[in-house]
Image 1 (cartoon, rainbow, N blue to C red):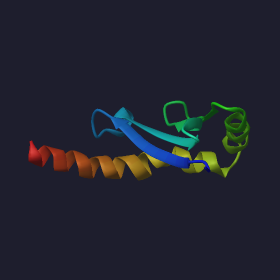
Image 2: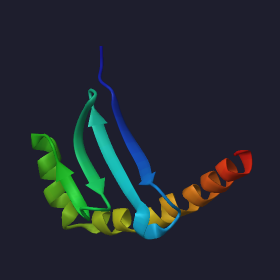
Image 3: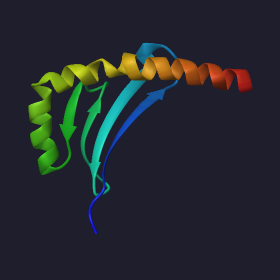
Image 4: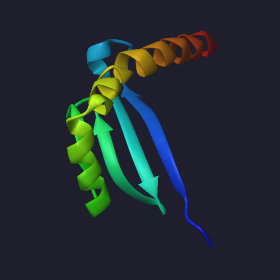
Length: 90
């Protein structure tokens, strides 16, 4: 009955300082994580045969540069907004 493929971007943080933020991008296929980029590691890591092949290719291509900027571009902006909203409600 088909398959499910989805991507997840997430930010793990304990403050709004960029050094305390980890950006994680994961790609899933049929509920199995096949590849992940973590700003802590600084590169893609594959967890399946397909994921390993893609990690090798993406780590040497323009995809890596895009993900390396995501912590500041994606996380920093959103965390500042969410953090301030949470503080005003507490």
